[in-house]
Amino acid sequence: MPAPVHLAATGCLTTFGDLEGTFAGLSEGAWPFGSGPGWAPGDLPVAQVHADVGALDRHRTFALAKAALLPLYGLDGTGLAVVFATTTSAMLLGEDAIEQHVQGQPVEVGEDLLCSHLAHRGAESVGDWIGATGPRLVVSTACTSGTVAFGIGADLLRAGRCRRVLVVGADALCRTTVYGFRSLGAHTRTACRPFDVDRDGMSIGEGAGFALLELGEGETELAGVATRTDAHHLTAPEPGGEGLIRAIRAATRGFEPGEIDHVNAHATGTPTNDGVEARALAVAAPGAWISATKGATGHTLGAAGVIEAVLLAESMRRGIVPASRGCQNPIEGVAVANVPRARVQRLGVSVNLAFGGHNAALALRFRGAA
Image 1 (cartoon, rainbow, N blue to C red):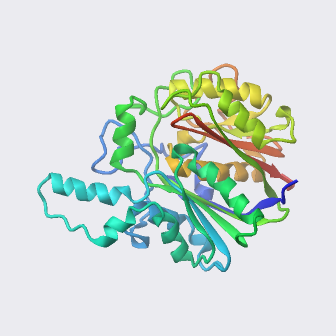
Image 2 (spheres, helix red, strand yellow):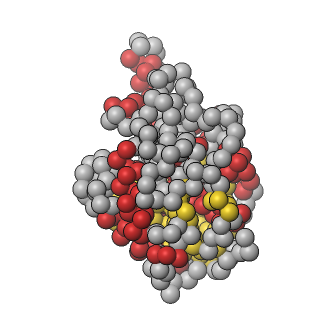
Image 3 (tube, rainbow, N blue to C red):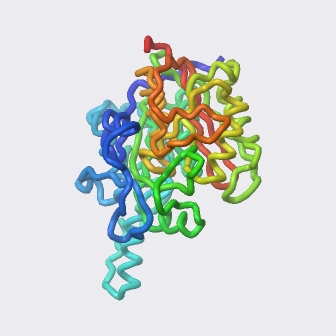
């Protein structure tokens, strides 16, 4: 058996604020979606972080990560590894420069701006800020990035490469993703309604989350992380959900499917994704309550796996499966929690799907007394 790894600290920042505000916002509070930044198309609702984070970093993605990590500022960084999950990274500032050029405005593109777009910069920025002396890695496997980062972090710990691991996921709203998903016809113009019979698309969100991983037993342990690729289509999942089923079974190896109490689903709100996912979860996690948090946070892309794992851990600690906001009439065949459900959760799973047929699953084991 591999050495146990536990979550020593967790947190996040979303349109609803910190972890406490976000968990409350899953069920109630102001409607999270609006028109977004000035460059965003007004007909596409997005979930924007309203906290003023600009003083923390000139790059919004890195600033969001640091804002989420403020509770850990001052942490001893000796032997601390950073695994940073993202898709947009420093893209927004580069887009601003391109827009200025297209409009005929003078653009100053310094070496620091060019270097900030290198793949490693997210981990470097966070690592320097918190004083981490261990390895620094960036993971970018599209929307599975955050979940994959947990697996890499656990491997680093078990291999003795570091003393602790800070898994961070962050993504900011930017033109490439918002307009890109609109061009695919995947972005709703009304409201994100995951697992609802009337769902018609996703809504992009921005935010950040973190988990501090340490070796040894703890209240919430990382029971397993697994990825599987079905390579069915560039952007659409395999219709039977076979890759997702295999990923969940691998992540929960040693447990029976009926032991899974709660699944935080990928649940983007698109007709194709949610239908496939519902079929897969009925096979891989029968009897589990299903939650879909993107109806509150929006789809935070590379950060989603971290934010959603953090919300799953908080759900297990509280003994509450949160409501799937936006889901009024759940599709058949899956037990979607469209209102909060009290449930003791000993085994929980968070799943994410990505372009290219990539499927990732993370399992948490709760040893506390919820």
